[in-house]
Amino acid sequence: MAKMTERMMEIFKKVPTVILATATGDGTPNAVPVGAKTIIDDETILISDQFFNKTLANIKTNPKVAVSYWEGHEGYQLKGSVTIETSGQRYEDTAKWIEELGAKAGFPLKSKGAVILKIDEIFGLAPGPGAGKKLA
Image (cartoon, rainbow, N blue to C red; front, side, top):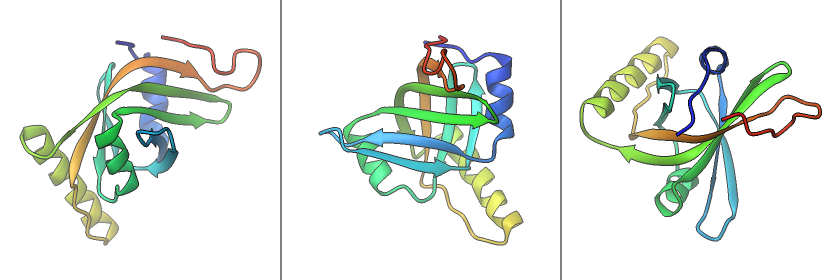
């Protein structure tokens, strides 16, 4: 497992949207913006599924994903495998959080599942000679 630094976590929390990349079993890529995200610990993030269609099908076929996020010229890519929780305390907490977000926005939202990413590798996204360098 790879661990995010405090700075990596700070930026993850600060940016409103991250990009979740998945692929089909034959390798066809798919990337979607995601705003409903949180950090569980320095090795694990949670993304709530409200609208996943192709993304969910891809995850069920191929659980390897990448999450990219950045602010200015500093950014990171987290790679690893995901699991989907549709019951249990973590899912219930996620469903409540998403329902509250929707109420605040005046738009009803319902979580279909909690997508849990265990981070295996972290890469830098900053431009320059270190672009794409494995950090953890």
